[in-house]
Length: 185
Image (cartoon, rainbow, N blue to C red; front, top):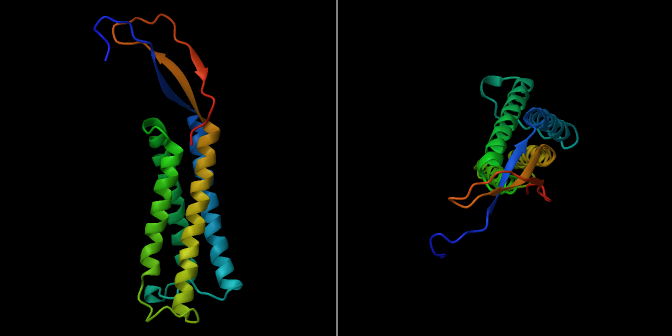
């Protein structure tokens, strides 16, 4: 602790500068690509593996309607992820790293109910178990796609600047901004 009246060196503070338009446009594109990834996984499961992801549809709804609902949910999840990442950039010290951690936990939480469904034992030959695994893979692929793309969007559109902050009681006449050498992680 320093004595009162002793001059203190200025502190460094990082201030994010976001290209907001590009950030949200990139988030929207990441959401669309995540929805396309969901359709691709559904198509691969149906054609190559002969697994029907939506076997337990209520009231005999058509499978395309269920796929449309999945696409809408994925689009909304990507948009919500974009907003959460933007808030993290503005508030959190290492926004992209924390967003990736949160995204990983959300993916795990979304897969847990699927894999814990009672299918009368874990028999890889049963249709129910194959459906569970395919649906868990769908969650994993879509989640990793959206998180990875939003990570890239943040790295491309967010810059951090170091700004000298005067010690309390000091007056600073000129602010110097220098680009921060590393992008957020």
